[in-house]
Length: 279
Image (cartoon, rainbow, N blue to C red):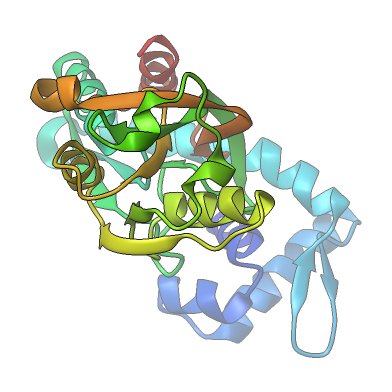
């Protein structure tokens, strides 16, 4: 059993595609396929279910990957640390939700780990090389990742205090039908959340303005340009006095950390998770 053989297997376990793994390692697809086949012979157990044009990690393969991937990650981490500054470690982070709040966490992480470079990508891209951690409010269903709930936030209706709706002691979503909505654009997960909540109350929202920046959504509401459905934690900063929030019963936005199983045993990954929990 060779280390490179295990690396081929772990990468193929994530992509479930020998050709993708072969391109990553710059070898023929046959080299990856034969290497995995030799590994299976040595283990006396198949690791993938094979069909005509596809492979799928089976239960034995999943259990094997859970044990082997962290071991390889620890080995790489030990080699990097032993080599000193010759090869600096990189922490690959994808932030698809809670962008503003993540800035403080990244600052604390860098202070604790000045030797690790943080590579931040905003917006999840499936074609990207595996991220170490993904922060998102979407259910990505990614193989090779462990999903952990960070926070579950109640949703609220945000209205300008001059809006006639603000005079209600209790404001419900169905009362927003016909109101101009300020919303995140269609690429952002909160857009789908707003559409679902409104659909549950029997109407399609009239979206007057969209933005990919939650700060703009809040600011536009504070200017009286429309109403919005937002997480309760939202901070309106210096224009909060113009906005009233009405909780929406029974609806939440759940934010998750997807942690690469191959690396979740590493000390700096554990430290990052602790920062997320204590934020």
